[in-house]
Length: 516
Image (tube, rainbow, N blue to C red; front, side, top):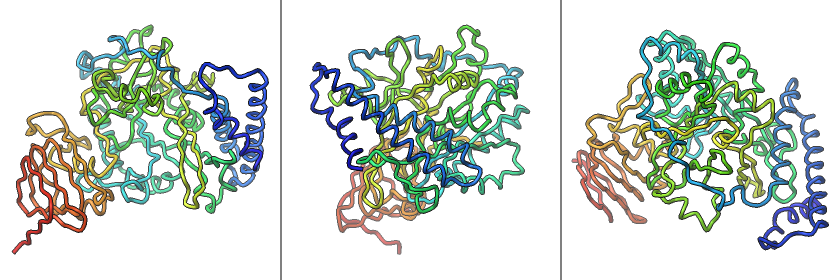
């Protein structure tokens, strides 16, 4: 293991000693190349050992997944230096981003034919642990006791019933979410939706010091050693599942991929019409929905032109001396919603010809036992450069309504939105279309605590900004308007009384009003 630690330091950590512009000697390059081969060979041997512990009947699938992992690991060893040279980056020409309001709507009689081309995929690999929940995040209740998954199924059911079609709903699960999701799906047996599932790959975490896989087996005792490698894995996993070939044979042309927790990511007929009815020579193989950046989105990935191709630029790829420039709302005006429309035939071509390329995201973690590990991941949108005639469409902000935190949950549970057939629509009673900025302190971060601190969800129709920190509780029928800041200092408590109207208020100190 000491030898592999030396390889790791020589391959990566010693790069800090090289000054840009100074060339390594040929012997340096040969030495490093030999070490890379050693690391790759050692990894291959360990993976083959791991495969012998795989459950019966899973070896073939495991071999496919490990091939993908070894390819990623090999790139990780080879690809040093920044993935983007800032000087080569160009802002997009205006025609590269289409305006949503310039898309034409299909006629009612054409809609059925359009929908017959479509498959909907929801990314369902995440757990609800960041919000204090066990099991799939999609099982968290959002509105009227309905979960993310319930609402997504209801949306597709409404579409199928309205137009007499059978748009399939496909869930990309992970090994973390699959078992629980399969149990939940039983309750939809009477619903008019064809639901399919497939699992994204299961990759071994890598010990940062030794560059060796962490798990010793596929058993439960090694579960912490495995991870799902990001949603960029959707292309190969969909292909390996056999579903890609099935949908192509069924006459489907496009998939619409989005995060299951984005409550704005509904099927859009105007975008589908644009895809299906573009002249063949101009039809895009890949459409990324983008929307205007606000101060809340400064870290969101954006589209650029790089070496003549449309490319997704993520925050993690930006050199440190250009971070402020990247965050600028005036220079980089749009960001990626992760709502993507992609040609099924083009996915098949790219997978079979091995022409997909997505930048590697190196995600460092520390396990419960203190071991430092790395996860090699990819992002689905980063493949945009591998598809022909790719475009971005600047969509309304309403198509980006993610729920990553309880601050987001407060917004979607409030009277800002009305729910209709599984979709959320902003209330016409709100006088301006922007979503308020809400920041709840760590006392609200778990769903259980969040619900306990609100006797009922406040009226947010006229809210611009809300910040809450400390031990704060809200009574029933509270209205929050304008900018409201509520801060309970350490050891103090603030109870907002039932029926309170707070408008452009700062509340601090110690406040407790008891009902009597």
